[in-house]
Length: 309
Image 1 (cartoon, rainbow, N blue to C red):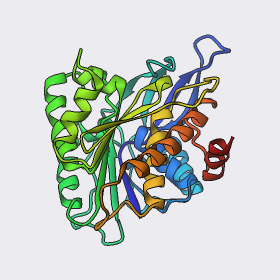
Image 2 (image 1 turned 135 degrees about the horizontal axis):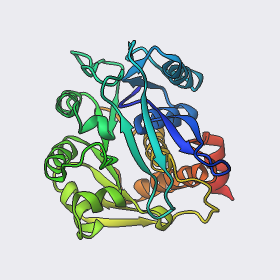
Image 3 (image 1 turned 90 degrees about the horizontal axis):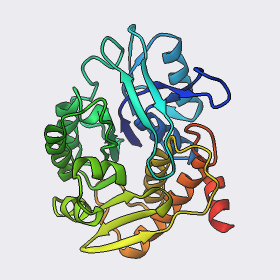
């Protein structure tokens, strides 16, 4: 079982065909990662706080419909988190503003007191890992690290966490607790203005992760493994929407690692050939998501067909 921890919310996405109109879409970066893993056939559970309102019921159903276990979810009578999405480009990605206070998100994060034996991997990320729940996330990463592998995607949201200095310290602390770290080029530019991506990846890799990956939009992805860099190009596509692209990359990366028994206690750091294979799978999944409106990750069959084409 892979356990995903993080926020679940409603994305309000501008309707390109109507002025001042929005489409309400199930979302949240960790939520999207859990859905992506479920569609790829990986046993997955989701740990979060979800409202009992109509939106919360839809979020819970979205998980269970895709085979994700929601037993670790705490249900709360307060309303669902809302995120207003401002569409970006293939290069910049989308921008988000959030309504968090007084919602189901605003309460103790429900990590188990003892690490569940059946859970071989923990993934954390997005603003729920660095905002008010940051300390409990760091503690859970440390607790899981003795019996499971851990992955981390900071997925920076500047409107939620504007203090670059304090967020940067927490991000580095959490990166040091992870086996795998993935970030977007935009995340790294916000954390370390003016610094080359390669330098940031090398710094994080030196803190302890087995490897670190940066997604570069239409330029593909760059990884740092054992002192060397690995570049993977992005498939050529007609971009419809970038919402959820990074989340699809993350879920597909974990899925590929799981298929090669590279997650869980006792697993080892990959060699270059394995990491390149995983990154190509992840890049293909991300590209498919970009051909669709909203976060709509692919199935394993769709990714494998894209890799064959």
